[in-house]
Length: 104
Image 1 (cartoon, rainbow, N blue to C red):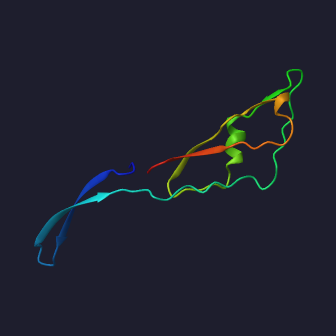
Image 2 (image 1 turned 90 degrees about the horizontal axis):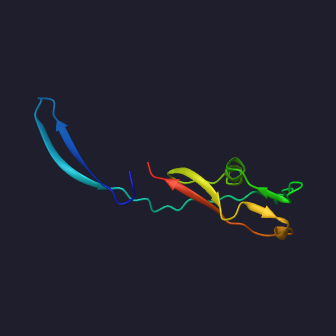
Image 3 (image 1 turned 90 degrees about the vertical axis):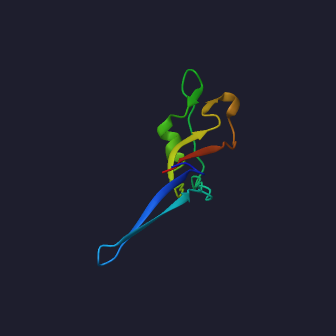
């Protein structure tokens, strides 16, 4: 399902004598809950490779950074705004981790 999707259902009621009645109802699916991002509890340290002096976070490493994050739907992926590091990035900096959810 996707947010705003309308699904038609038919409801059938049967009594003990076998008599039935039906009606139809449209249900609109809405996901109004934001995901909850959980950042690592400590700083993450990477070591720039030799001889290039660079490091690129792998997707499993990015996924691990988002561990503990939740959503009422399924988390489809984690991404980071810049997973490439070189000598110009040395020191303490902040990076943004993005969480993409998938509707049921």
